[in-house]
Length: 585
Image 1 (cartoon, one colour):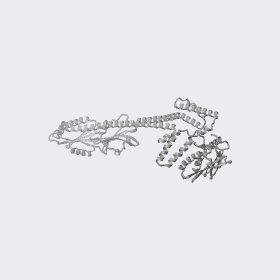
Image 2 (cartoon, helix red, strand yellow):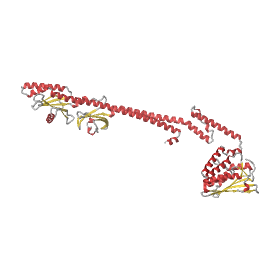
Image 3 (cartoon, rainbow, N blue to C red):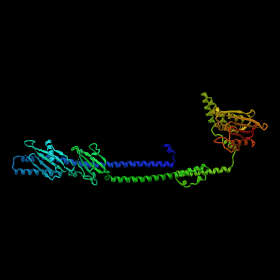
Image 4 (tube, helix red, strand yellow):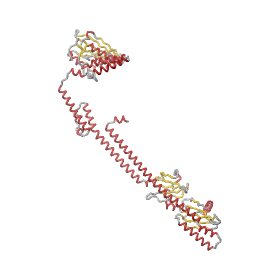
């Protein structure tokens, strides 16, 4: 990844890092927004649960109050006296008066709790009366079961849950005597509770929310809201875990926030439903607005980043184009951009310095062309390496002795050969050497090449001893041998033979040195170019043209280089010099 980024252009790199920064900011912004919304949801959930808990507490408290009221009625001494007297032997008038007084006392108790619709009393003596206006009466066949259940509880209150939601909730308690005979059954009180009214009176949802409440006793529905959309809601399908909790529930294509709580006192489960879309509509609007603003800001930031990167890198691209033009030699194109150079920042400074440099280069080139003074000897000396020979010789001598200490004759001889070559190349005092010295340089060079190529190269010299003391320009033969190595040995699969042969011509006045090889040879077109010297040396080598010109400068126009070659039959380069040598280069 880092390698790919490093290979990017500055423009693409700027855009990439700006987009990355924008994405990080947007990710952080979205994370904070999501966390805020989540906190907001949790607060709303907590508020809804708190509201439901308050309603449940009110309902449970009133249920507890009604049960306590029934206990107080059953233990009320006045009511006990009236019940005992009714069962005793008194006149009908007295019985009617006491019965009326008993009903009034029960009515006083009933009116103390709004949710009590009626109180019914019956006993085995045939007394059965009702106080209040009961909306739903128990079926007569159920009354006997209620009385039996209350009797089994021996004075404790018993709650009778309705078989259907429309029926009320029933509380039954057997009244037992607190006088002699103690705990004698006196009758049964049956309280009919208007449970729907009780729930609606205590269930007070937040203003503006259509919250609904369900009350369950196991799988039995005690209270169901009147909303038609919730009449078919199956509470048994809700995955309730634990005594309290909350979850999202989908009912008839709508989402509801559902909170539930199981009462530890009665065992009833209270379920509240809050329409999610209605409650969180403002949050949705806020979220959409934030996302819209964030999207717009993202587009604006990307646009600004692109324009900034483009404006920042445009002068750099212009400078790069100027440099490419200058590299190709078109200096006029390098000075066309003036606006970038007018900038006061670092890039403008670079443009100014570059333009100044181009003007100086043009001036220098113009001056060189006007002078037209080229000294051949200076050109020849410029080809030789200008390094510190003392340091180089000492280094090579150290390497040579290290090789000798390790008995490595090959490395030692290679170092000595290289030293011989460098010593000859760096000897600027002489431009002419003897043929013997030139051959010694070639022998050192060929030893290094034989180590490199091994048996693939075969080198031999056939130079007459009378030609050894003749003068020749330094490095006149060695570059030709070097060309034979690189152009013949490298392209020959087997052994390549390179030979230096000398012969006297023109009645012994001149010498011809022939450097021949049995390599692949040269094609006719390329050979013609070489003969016309329309060819420059590659890299830092000395070309044939340079050798030819130095021979003519040293000995005259009749001397120089000739060449013969045929594809597949090798190449022969002939160098002609006067025997003995004369002149200077």
